[in-house]
Length: 396
Image (cartoon, rainbow, N blue to C red):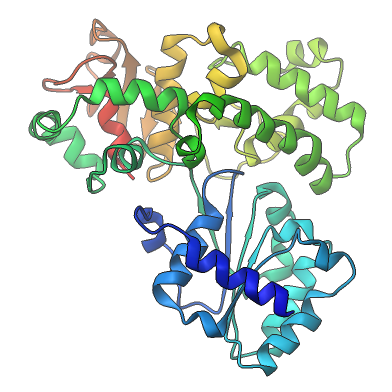
């Protein structure tokens, strides 16, 4: 245990707190059992260590990654018992999905040690959701996204720009864009971001960013999905084929029958595979109604989760128009409800209609529609209901 404690102290002391994501304020850290899930690479570990360093006595804290070889022959609950008996009050568990009995033991730890706060994370969103019922009525769960365009700018340019509410962007975008442009060129930074800005590890080495992203995708497909669901290697190969088709076609309205024929499986299997990829934050599924969604419900449109994924998977085949819509979907859906529109690209909060396009896109498609807007790429300033696309990256 001494070695684990020493490792915990070293990690906490060495974490850089120069840039701390605003997401740290979304979590209510007063709850006794907190679950933080999110895609691999979004920065969950860093966020935990930063919070500990700034808010909790290190002497009463233990940070553990459950992929440590120590847990191959030792039980977590036995270690926790010793930790609590020695005055421990705060337990942070990382990579919990790598420990086979994690949900049962965390439930028991919560019930047995009333004076202990437990915060746990998992990179496999699928596996966390699969075991979520074991911790019902005990844990409060949060889902951490990658960096927004606003956060990327703050990180890269050392700014302190605050989130901008949707209504402010819609009705005051001219004033907002003029203030922003005085400080930096938003179009240039937007172009950087859609290529390699969603995952914080861009700071480590931008040259290998897409290589790391490809490795994350492979781990999700080869490890996370099989760990979470009882599916065969044969099925994983079909999911990979499906993802390749999606990555070179998105966004598109899926023909489930044709997709099933192309990857040689059933229609229901295709819908199930789409559900897996969506839960793993590899793709986004757009529907006309988000209420009462079932696994076997056909989506109206399929997108990759973020433009970075499109560039990593499709490379030169990435279409500019597709990148625009993918960016809008990703940035807006974190804080607002996004659904398909019958007359344009998106509906937001069942109130606002959006068409996405290049700077020369006209308003004919939304003509006569109330509360309708055009989000345009490659413009610094908007006018009326024409709004710069990059501004929607400032919502969170």
